[in-house]
Image 1 (cartoon, chains in turn purple, green):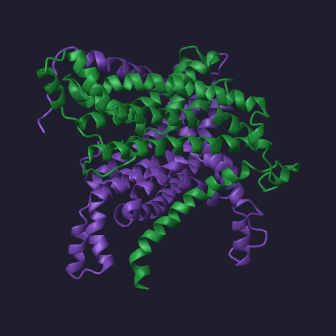
Image 2 (image 1 turned 180 degrees about the vertical axis):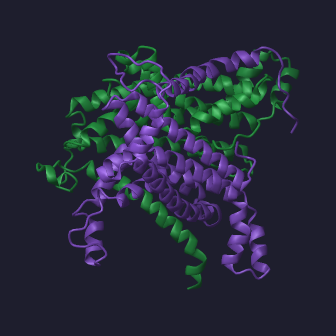
Image 3 (image 1 turned 90 degrees about the vertical axis):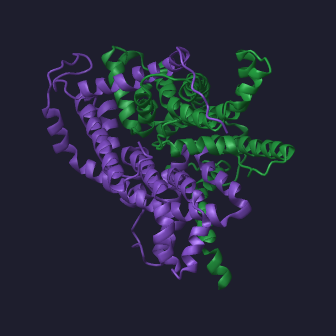
Amino acid sequence: MSETIRKKGRTGYVLLAPAMLWLALFFLIPFYSLLAASLFNKGGSDFRGYSMVYEWSNYADVLKAYWPQIVRSLVYGGIATLQCLVLGYVLAYAIAFKAGRWKNLMLVLVIAPFFTSFLVRTLSWKLILSDNGVVVNTLQFFHILGPTGHLLYTPFAVVMGLTYNFLPFMVLPLFASIDKIDYRLIEAGGDLYANPVVGFFKVTWPLSLPGVISGTLLTFIPAVGDYINDQLLGSTQTRMIGNTIQALFTEANDYPAAAALSVILMSMIVVLVFMYVKFAGTEDLL
Amino acid sequence: MRWLRSHLVLLLGILVLIYTFVPIAIVVMMSFNKLPSEQSKIYKWNTFTLQNWLHPCADPSMCTALKTSVEIGLLATFGATVLGTLAAFALVRHQFVGRSGTNVLIFLPMAAPEIVMGSSLLALFVAAGFAGQLGFWTILIAHIMFCLSFVIVTVRSRLAGLSDTLEQAAADLYATPQQAFWKVTFPLVFPGILGAALLAFSLSFDDFIITNLNAGTTTTFPMYVWGVSRRTIPMQINVVGTMMLIISVVIVVGGEVRNRRRMRALAGPQPVRPDSVVAAAGARSTAGHLDAV
């Protein structure tokens, strides 16, 4: 195949301009507004208006007030990501190497839940985990859960919902990565007397690392910022950073605090992404 | 025992898939459930009924919300697909200064948490004095914004897989550039564009977090579900959920069948895939790869 030649001239700019302008106007500039809003005076409101006073203490205040929610989001997001990694890896590996002619069907089934409304799906977990539901009754029968124990409105339910909802984000990049692995390499590992476990950690896992990295990032980022799962499956004891930001914006109308929390969430994620990429040392991300 | 050992991974994989379908099965099941009269039994199976399917608009506000979602979804899909396709052509086929900056700008909206994007857009609308005018148009603006990157990435990957030899051949055969584009390039890229459009629609239709912050008093379908989740939940939302599943499965299977037929006609040795839709969903998940195309 011959190399595609990139045409010179103005056409490229003309084609690119509308999309970039849209992103600049409604993605980049809003960031600036967010940063600005996070430094507005505390006394402002919708009616009286805000003034830009470089109120850096907004940050200290929200950190002090909402650090439990921040830590909780990281913990819940982290556990959910780990669970997705385990479940997703098994599924992606099975599709890539074991599914044979059912490969396409299984891939379609992975993305099919995507197409039923996110909220409706999450609500159906409410039914599954409800106090008289099958899961609770079974657990109570085996005395894993006390007779008055419940699952709904606990951290367990929230992490469960996060794991469920973001699993496809993990499976697809993992599949893309594992599917590229030459299966002969794994067989060669077996021929060289590696037992399956050693073989997995010496051959398959390192080769699938790009998928592991993009999968964990793509699961962790939305999971940490999510508030739907927590609002529907959790309680006031399980509130996450997303819920807090949303409530501050839409209910308390405290724009400076909400904006400051958003900026904190965004910076945490940027730092994490960079650390992760650096640690993992993959160039094909960013 | 040996059979079990060699099929263990596949069995576990199938178990995971079953787990992802449990809530879907519940959605389908509940679409046939008669709403219990007692508030406390709301999340329970009551009795079988077809009423939910026969009267989907029993709560008119649900259908109004649904209509709003479809309208916004179609407009946002149109806007994002047009802008995104143009940009994808520029990225693959044209030279310009600032390529890496452009790539970062395309990548960021896919990596930023929705709550941050939603709240910054709200901060902008408030700063610009539009706090009172939040509604249909602000939702549309937001939806085009967050669908755009996904469209660009999907179309770009399709376009990057095509060499321009065919266009050159068309030019050699005295096709004008316009003819070469519309007769050769565009038909080849079209499946990618279609996949991108489907992805954009499903992203727009299902979005809650960004929409909720910028919607004012307008209600979309996910916002309606959110609203009723604290009160009595009409079982009709499960009808909508089931319909969405059926429609998308029909689209995916239809694409697959068409694909197979075409592949058989070409008798090529290529593996068949439900390409457009898997590629589209894959774009969402492999968006992390910012290859310097």
